[in-house]
Image 1 (cartoon, helix red, strand yellow):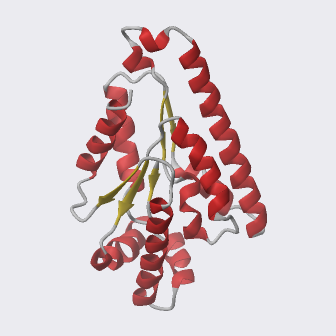
Image 2: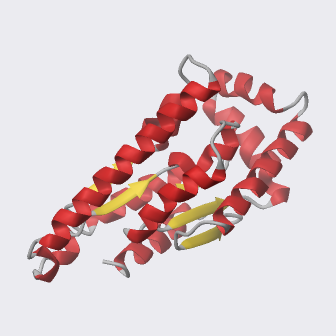
Length: 213
């Protein structure tokens, strides 16, 4: 599960992870981009509490689906099959509920932690892509404005009146995300993305998956 602020590189890493897993013949892959998860709910009409309820319901149902998928796999003879590495249920989730602090939604840490506990029991790891403080303005404000276009530029205005203020807002959000990760029951890693070597980060996550299948 990938987490990180706007412009941290989640999508770049997510896409490369999926490509590598497909190339490695992973045949039971559950992959969901951020656009299909938290983004869908936070950018639709409605009040924050309505978005929060939808996100929590979605997270609970997704976790239940993963639990049932794992239960069926473990109850079968497949874990002992010679093709088990290719058939083991594998999920790659971008964003999901662990970006809650980014959107200011009324969802408590404890509620999300309950879901994390269930995911930890399934062996799901939490990987946070961290942007160095001195790179936030260039990467998360200026670069994303350039690549995401006018809508993103308007969205950025909610973060402050100047790029300096917007950068500080994102820095504070990232600090909160790091605090969330540090209190997670899930196995977790923080990857410093100063080098912006998306292929290398993806390879590290794929190796992490391979070591637990």
